[in-house]
Image (tube, rainbow, N blue to C red; front, top):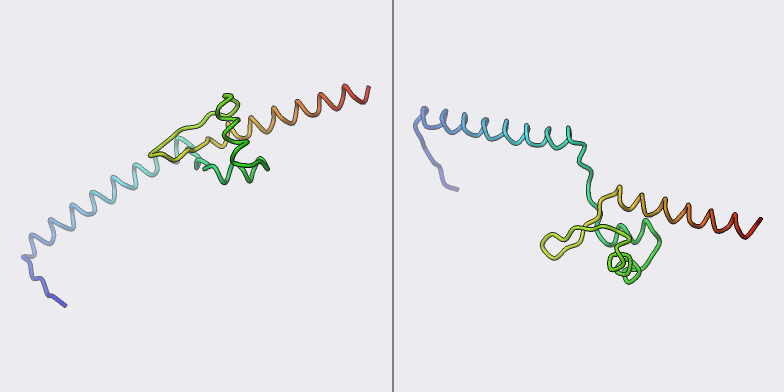
Length: 102
């Protein structure tokens, strides 16, 4: 183990700078919460939510049925977009079943 010795003023300056960084990080995190940013979903999570395979999910992307964002070769989806797709699929199925029943 090494022991490092430093001047008290230097230590106090270092401590002040660390506290300033902590305040900035806290402010940035709070700002993200204020914007109500939700966690994005990856392919596996979306497949589980929708009850579909990865190939079907790719088809949804190709047809433009589900918006996505690609970050560093990984695909992410907004929870709202997945929810909208679920709702539209539900309404389509409900309308189709109403037509067949009548």
